[in-house]
Picture 1: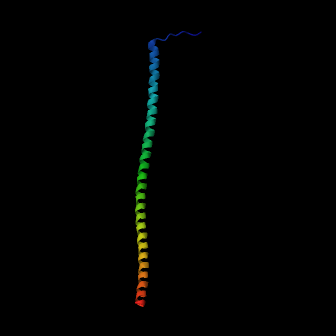
Picture 2: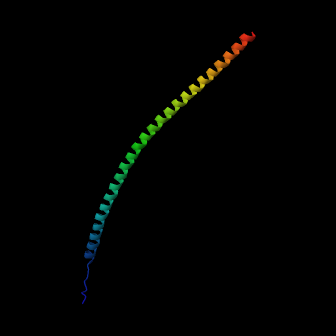
Picture 3: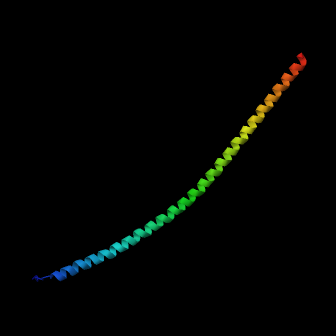
Length: 100
């Protein structure tokens, strides 16, 4: 047969309190795990930022080389144009000497 137990208000309050105390421990453990994960994410982001900085520096170096290369090609093109103009002037000078 079942026994009828009467639970006092104090007993009930104690049970609820113990239940919440256990919940606190579970929450604390879970928050610790979440904090650990956030720390791991922070470390990964710092590594990514460092790599990104290196890439940005490399990109600047490439831009400088491209600019230098473009200037070199401009100089070569101008030298070629000057050479062509020099040849044309030579032809004109010979024509003047022949007809002059």
